[in-house]
Amino acid sequence: MSTTGTLRRRAVRALTAGLATALVAALGACASIPTSGPVTEGQATPEDPGQPFVSAAAPRPDASPSQIVQGFLAAQAQGARSSFDVASEFLTPEVQEEWSPLAQVAIVAGEPELVVDESTLEGGTTTVRTTAELVGTVDEHGVYTEEVPGQTIEISYGLVRDDRDQWRIGTVDDGLTITETNFAQTYKQVNLYFPTLDREYLVPDARWFPSRNWQALAVRETLRGPSEWLAGSVATVAPEGTALSIDSVPAAEGTISVPLTDPVTAASSADRALLLAQLQASLGGRVEITVDVGGSVLSADEVPTIGVATTPDDPVVLAGDQIMRLQGRTTEPVASAAPLTGLQPTALAFRGRSTDAAFVVRDGGSRIVTAPTAEAGPTTLLTGSNLLAPSIDRYQYLWSGPQVQAGSLQVVDLGEAGSDEAVTPVAAAWLEGRTVMSVRVAPDGARVAVVSDAGSGAQIHVAGIVRDESGRPTQLSEPVRVGQPVLAATQVTWVDRALLGVLGRTAGTAEPVVQRVPVGGPTVPSSPVEDAVSLASATGVSTTLVGTSDSSLYAAGTSTLWTRVATEVRLPTFPG
Image (tube, rainbow, N blue to C red; front, side):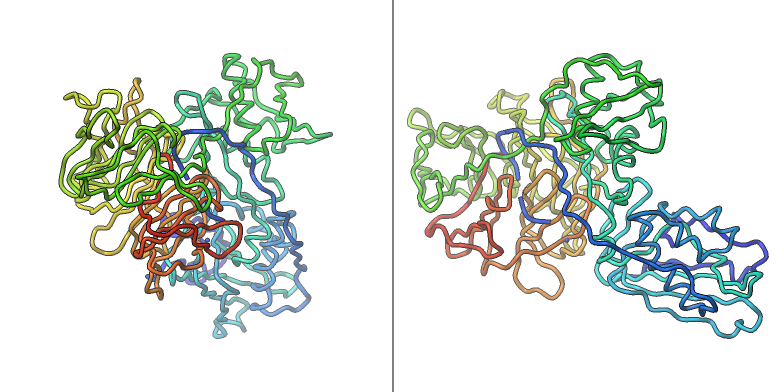
């Protein structure tokens, strides 16, 4: 099993070339919502939903080729919970020694269809081909890639009769093929955490590991470092060469001991403490972590209090020409902004508390200004054609730029607003030629979500933000694409530490709904809100707000249904 470019074959040499060839082809054609703003700290604690038991049986005597392949597929799922011993019994001894089950995982929508080549059965060899709809893949580092709906995968298994005249698999690709249901039961989503470059917050990097040994894999991958797209936006504190000294992470009486190799001792005491904070967050947050090197506990500074940046539940809306603070179902004018008389507000942004924040307003589509106050009128911050709705990061940079892209966004240093040096480009070559609909910076300031279209449908990307020593953004990393089922979209927001909310449409739907798009996981649509036109969220599903074309405002609340909380308001906005 494999996807394009990652196939690693395990074949019995005695097989014919035709039998030794397996085809894996990708043919052309889901979590709860929670986003960003002034930064508060949250716990970096992965959830453990508990997982049902998955069982499998060893090969039955005189099992047919199709039964052998069916049994092998069932045993793969069990292996992710316990061991792959049962799965290996379906393989020839030669392949048992070489098969690498965790090289890659193909997640399929249902049980694969099997077709047996009966023309060679009498000669003691055959090929069983399976076909299934491919939902996603997980690579050897636990990185989940969602696939476009309707894509299929074909896998071939070469079977031979062994010296006991039993069918066994003699040709198999490295990796696993698991149904969505079994994947959910046997794999655990884990956020690895890496400190921001200024070491103020932890940034999540979502991975998926077999539940049987997820702790050891989480430590291994934390030491290996972040995903490529995030590498230039976070810090690594483990010295090069640091690794697990044994392939396990022992736990006893509420304490997890992490056995590491000698290179970790080269880290400074402060870096050791930050590494402990990383490991503690990645392994559960509430557990005590010790690092053991050669039988001795590694000394370190006191572990710093470092959390995940979150967005407070402090929304505002626009009622008439007045920015209003929203509290439940009531609104009141914000004291720090005068009526927006003479402006054509099409988007709002702010940082800090809504009660005393300095607001910015997109005036029509060609100008972003400061909101007027009782003492001063609006000041122009940025001008251009079809400017993006602004997003303000924790470093006090306002993000925008033209929707039609030449390969860079623009940021305005709000501390230098009005000066010639305030506006600078942020290079993003991958955006060249695309039309950008929405940009939103994560509350940690290390990541940005972008919705854009090159004419063939919307694409949702997440990129790392590269900054200079002063904190000024200079470029975006090569991004990771998420939300593959979304065909059209207008707005994106951060809903949780590694989860986006996207107002968009998928195949078979006429109206946009809030799509829950993990940064490394399957997209899940929420229930629809009729005539939805705007989206905003703080951190947590219950904070999500949707505005409609008739100026009604709906809140997600704690149920699966949306509740109308206000009328005659628009432009719901949280800090960020």
